[in-house]
Image 1: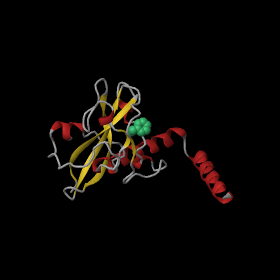
Image 2: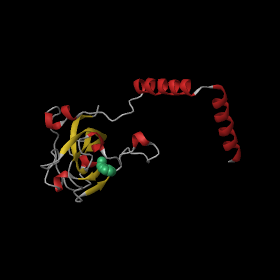
Image 3: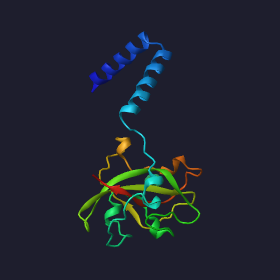
Image 4: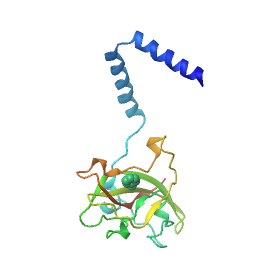
Length: 174
Ligand code: ABN
């Protein structure tokens, strides 16, 4: 791997000799801003349009919703709020939902249809510790940061303390 190190060092030195810090920062920030338009790199807030807001038709349920195998938990990484004083789609009293979420596409075997499901963390109370699910449908390892679901989505809340996670149906996946 020495040649990789030498190549990297050569490139870094070349850039350092030929490009000023200000113009490097300006180019990098232009690339970052530009790429955000092409590729949606941040989690998206859909909570206003999800199940609680009545946006999606409630799909047929069935099965035990506190079981990690329950279909709508297919990409859930966290403690299920329904075991923590909340429900499948509402946070326990004293906690508040994160506006950003991880989104998965889960198969409802009772209807044989796929649904987009948003996993919102409930924040502001210490970790619930019950009914943990570590499901990984469509998840990628941590080094593929934007496709990794082991993230505290409370980071944008008044309190970043994670309590549990709800699984909201956003709508049918078309
Ligand atoms: N989204 C659940 C979670 C919270 C904190 C840390 C890892 C995962």
